[in-house]
Length: 294
Image (cartoon, rainbow, N blue to C red; front, side):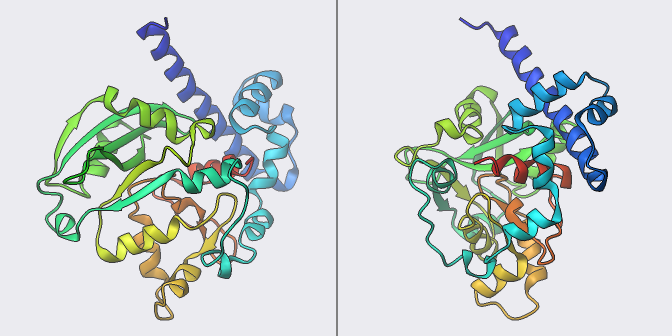
C-alpha cells in the first residue's frame, strides 16, 4: 500500500515536472523561428537532453521538437479553420476518442441566478488542492438543492500561493461558506485530467454559478471540441449578439471559474493570437498543446 509520504512525494514530483514543462514551452516560443534543438533546450533548463526528453514526452505524449508545431500561429489558425460553424456542428469522432469523451463526460447544471446575485449566500463550497499535469490546482465542489450528489463549481490553478488561489475563487462568491477538505476533492482531481478515466456513462457534474449572460457564454464554450478553437466574435455571432459584442464575450470568458472542464482556453483571437487567459498565457499554451495529442 502506498503510504502518505510516498503519495506526497509523487505529487511534488508532478508539480516539479510541470514547472520544467513550462520552462521548455516558454523557451520554444521565444525561439520558435530558430527551431531550437533538444540540446539547446536542455542547456537552457540546466538538465541533460535525455532527462528533458523523458519528462516532456511523458507529459505531452510527444517530444519537445514535435510539440513546437502546436505553439505556432500557423497551428492556431488551423485550429480556427471553420470556426464560424464549429458551434453549430455535430462532431462524430467516435465514442472511444478521448477528444469526444471529454465533450461527453460532463453533465452541466446551473445555479439559480439569484444565488449568484447574493454572492453565493447560502452555498456550502468544499475546496481542496491537488497536483495535476498543469501544476497545483484548487478544486471546488458544491451541491444543488434537492440533488443527491455534489458537482464541480470551480477549478483554478495555484501560481504564487494556495491563499491567493483561494482568494481569487472566493471573490466570485464572497458570501458562501467554505470548507477546506483535500480528501473530498481527490477523486475529481484524479479524473479531470485523466483521459483514461473519462466515460460518457459516468459523467462528472459541473455546476455553473454566474449571471445569466455568463452562464450562456460558459455553456457555449462546452460546444468547442478538443483540438479546435473559436474566436470571441464567433461566440457573439452564435448567440445572436450585436456586432461589437466581442469585448463583453471576452470578459465573460475570462470570468469562467471552471478551467479546463469549461474550455475557455479554446477561445482565440480571430488573428490566431492566443489572447488572454486568467491563469496565464504559458498555461494556455500548455493546455492547447497537451490536448492536441488527442
